[in-house]
Length: 458
Image (tube, rainbow, N blue to C red; front, side):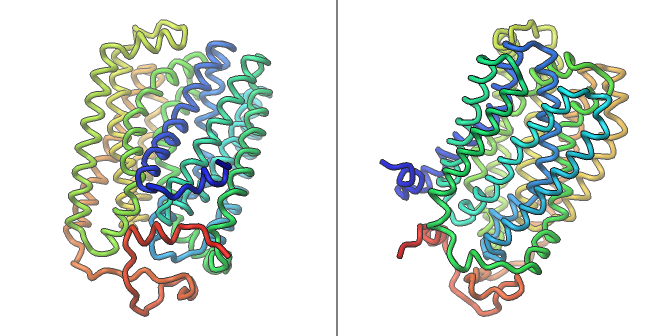
């Protein structure tokens, strides 16, 4: 079987989408963890701390690159914007991402030093590959072919991670290893999209209007604010530690917090493949269906969170101590708070997606902005006064407030939504200045939507 045939395999697309999305999301989360483990084992705790803050800063800059468009694109079931317009918008946001990154590193160069600045710059470039791939993944997810996007990202993540691990072991140099991983990731990305995109991007999808690109960025601006501040909130403890503590403390926090993302990871396994179904339910006015789906997902997230906390209490720290080669057992209380924060993080992320589908961008932005003020002014005093426990308390407090607020907003929005008739999903050629055509058309079912994602021939 050729690489192209493997990537475009159309048999059992729903099942394959779930399986490959699970693998892709798992590798995305494990990438940071494995990089930290290998760096700690081979290069030591201080270098691992430098990598940890590099990952946090690169992730925040990556939010500038994605600009909150990912969920918007995946739920754009009306095809309001073309793929060319999504790509053009992404090129502009990547340029902004690099510019902001350069300014930050120039301002922090004296405090960080050459090595730390170089590591952060390389991590930002690695994140840029993720940002470029994100718009391709969204394109296939929008067409009900998440399996193709997930296969691509799984292969690319694997290539990047294997290259980094081998390079660290062979060179004992973090900078060189990041360069090798970056080159490997870029090559894999270029090869993979050359095998898939040409058959899917039709002439209609290549149409581009600058006015529509501007409309896309304007529509996603509140989502960007929300997503950027969300990332800031999730990493606020790391930034506070970076300001008042040393690289060794940063490394320990990184070791302890990583398992907390297990709940968020598993939650994404479950709800990412369902975004299309949530979107069509909301667009068609089936609020009761969406409410039922939301409650079921929240129950599943809390169940996973409880199981994770129980497992973590009994075997979590002994396992982590063995993995990192460092005795972490004295951090049990901090570890349990961070595991609980994993559940509140997963809940807030899921409700962020639900509110995005409802197009409540402004509400999300206001919520995250309010909580970010707390993080900005409360982070340093908490870490300075209570150390790692202060960082853990900050994390669970911020994500807990967001979870409760977003749940209330979602329920109010569903309760006040008036029953609607199925909303038509217009074809690409009916677009005019980025607006849906007023001409009624037959609604597209999920199964038909998947057929629209088949490669074009002839």
